[in-house]
Image 1 (cartoon, rainbow, N blue to C red):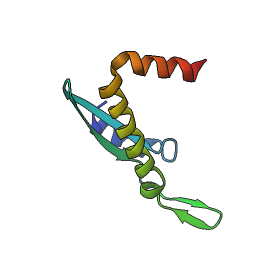
Image 2: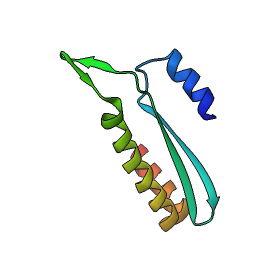
Image 3: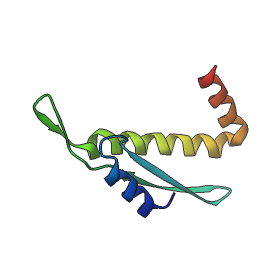
Image 4: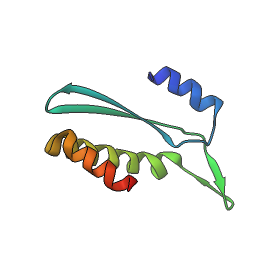
Length: 87
């Protein structure tokens, strides 16, 4: 899904998801990504939570970790990890 379509969906569905990750495989050794956060502020227990700090940094860490795993171990490594999560 392109970023404009994600923007439209996020605006129509506030507070349903923290954001989206967009991956682009440049070549066999380079995978780029972009983070698109849902910046709708949320009031929680009388305080506003900043969605950028609450979700963007964890999404970035997860994306970088999984890109590294993918490049180190290839698809076999990723499939084994997915199967272990679903078992």
